[in-house]
Length: 239
Image (tube, rainbow, N blue to C red; front, side, top):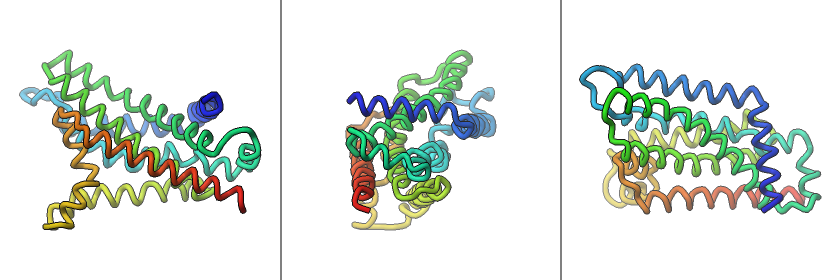
């Protein structure tokens, strides 16, 4: 646990000392702020809800989260420090989990910045705070899953931009498919896809329902991709 914590602290500091980290945070807050303005969430006669923000944020996160996680392992490959880490008394699992936790904490801090919209809505309206907090919990779980995938794609290459593309493109296609195509398919294929439909699971949280199925889905997805990332890092020992 101590090794994992040390790696996490080192990676978290590097994220906050990197200009990319602040660019990512600023970009995310700017985009969500524009969504609030465009949807007139604070307009007169409008319902006191952030549902439009919660519905659109998953699309934004397909770009933002891979940008957060793209350097986690790929930078170690590029700089050559991966060789030192693999010979140090640190297991591959400790290494990957430490990197993952740092990226996830960074994401949670970034997401918490949007709580200002909820505070303002509470100041000028009467929103359903419980439903909003459930939606935020859903977005946090989405980050748990997306960040694990981003760490996995970062473990595949030494180039940060390639890692970003490998993380962003599949996530964008999957979310777009879930939003645009799933309603057009029927029968068993639809039922099977609905089991892994990110937007379906997230929608339950957006409606104020903390679903056990959704929690298990996002957690299991994170475990799967972290396991794959560990295996990729392990394979480097034999190259």
